[in-house]
Figure 1 (cartoon, rainbow, N blue to C red):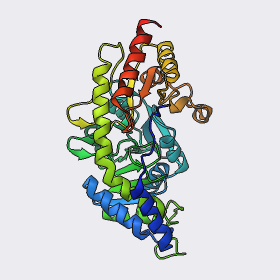
Figure 2: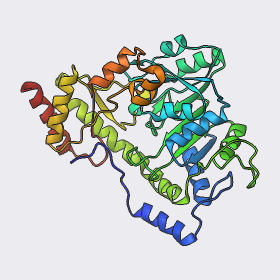
Figure 3: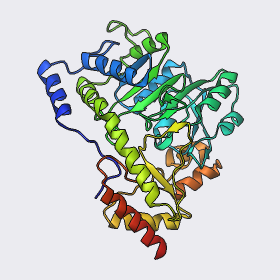
Figure 4: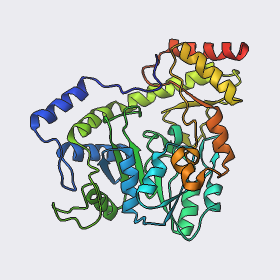
Length: 369
C-alpha cells in the first residue's frame, strides 16, 4: 500500500541518534534544554527567519504551552475552526479555556476571518487559525481583527512547516506559532513540536513552562509541565531539517503533476493563492457527494493507494465536544468538507507511475461508478 505519508529516515538520522547515546545526555531539565535541543532550535529559527524557537515534545504540547504562556485562564474563550484535528481544541480545554468553533472557506479549508469577527466577545482572549493541509490561513486579515480587539494570535502551523504567506514562513505569522514533527509530517523528530516567537520575554517564559515553570531547578515560579524535547528527537530533527528543502521540492513536483493529471476528472482540486506557497503536506480534493467520495476511496485502496479522509467529522461533532453541547452548532462548510474531501499521496516516495495509477483509477471510477 502506498501510504498517504511516511517518515523518510536515513544514515544521517542514525548517526545523530548514536552520538546522543554515546554521549550519555538523553535530556536536560533546564529551561534552556540540552545541547542538541539548543542546536535544533537555532537551526530551525534560522530556517524560519525567526528570533526564537522553543522545542517541545509534541505539536499538542506546543499549542498547550503557547496558550499557557499567553495567560489563558479558566473561562477565557479561544476561537478556532472546527474542521481540523482535535488537538487544537484539546489544547484550549487543557488550558481551562472554552473553544469557540467557526466555519471555514471551502476554497482553502481554513478559517473565514469574518466568521472569527462575528463570535468575538469580552471573553475572547485568543484565536488559533489552522494552516490546514499545509496552506496558510488568511493571517493578515485575522491579525488585523485580533489587534483591534486585543486578542492573541496563535498560529497552528502544525501541518505547514515550509509553507509561506506573503513572503513570510508559516509559524511566524501570528504572535506565536506552533509546529508538529509527528512521523507523518513533512519532516519528523519521531514525536515533537516547536513554538516560534520574536518576543524575548515570551520565549523565556515558554522555556520555563516546558520544564515545570523552573528557573534553575526545583524552584517553579509559574505553572508548567514536562513538555521537553528529548535529545534523540532533536538529533533526528537536525538531520531532517537539512533534508527539508528536498522533501518540499518533491512534494511540490508531485502535487503539480497530480493536478495536471486530474484536470477534467470532475473533482474540486486544491487552490493556492498567488501570495502563498503550499507545503503539500496533504493533497486534498473534494468530491461532489459523500457517496462519490466513498467510491473513489474504495477503488483507490483496492488499487494499493492509501487515500485517506482528513477529517471525516468536524471537531464540534466528535463525541467529546458533542457531549459538551457543541453538537447542535451549524457550520455548513465544515460539514460539507467533512463529507466530501479526500486526500491523496504526494509524499517524496511517490513516483510518476504512482501518480498515473491514481489518476487512472479516479477517471475509471468516474466513468464507471
